[in-house]
Length: 429
Image (cartoon, rainbow, N blue to C red):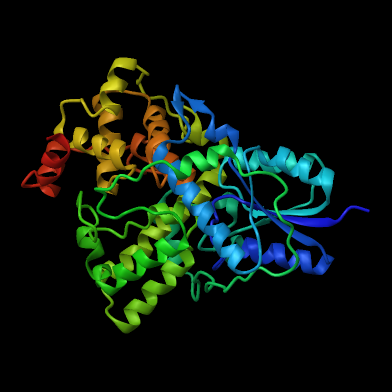
């Protein structure tokens, strides 16, 4: 008789602390007296795939993901647990496990986009019992003051409903500890993972982006200790500086730190240190992230079509020459070129810089907005599907923007946020 196992399918939740999916997997395994297998997959659809001729992932993202997996495995091993790593698609890796063991259930985070939803549907069509858990959302569906199919059409409507609901707060972070019996990984680690671990880190980045929960907590605690949260709203649009914004996006997108922890830490900061518009504004930005997650779930495939969820056609094209100039930072617009070159070197640019280069691609170069979204996907260390594609659709006026698009005066923006040209000189010299 085969040994029964419960599989925790690890996606973008590369942490032990405050991980409801891990907690649920342990609970199911204990109730069934089964062993538990934690499985992270380097899905070929992304690691080897392309879109618009661009790789789905780049070196910055791959290195950070590989480091985060390495750190998660160390965390698990410290708790007498383990983490399996496969280069196969989840369905193929789990089918192999099922040949050796009896898979009682597959526990995973609730998908926010089409490909992940289809992966789970494939598992279910092959007869696997799946348990979807809301892991990296601020709120569970039953907490929301509206039905999911009635998601407000704009972020403003979403935020106002959330903030007007009495006693609505994210769940407090839980102290997740793996429990139960574990099985040692029966195969060698994928060569793709070892190669990604060896990718060098760009050393001149103001905030070294090292994967894993330990690095996430170290940076977040240093940010709070420096009282940078108290000026977050005033400085978050600046192009450079280690404390001008929270720099949490990479750790959030890879699931190294929980958004609920950040939310509750800001409330604790307000109680113990200072409460002002800036301390609130970080939660405001977490609500933006939350909105895009639910928006992505609702719009599904339409988020990725040229006409976007609003089914509106822009007179743009996919001209190779103009796109090549844009992605190499050779457009002739100094603030755009500086930002693209920083992106290419480091895998990160500020939120304001992302808006400016998107506006340039769509409204100055008249290019298909999806080219920009795909390029960001291939370059950003903090890429996550909902925020990336949702924001690009927003700028293009094809998403939840009530104004029908965001066109920026690039020279005015450069002079406002880089008045002495330090940022442009750094990346253009």
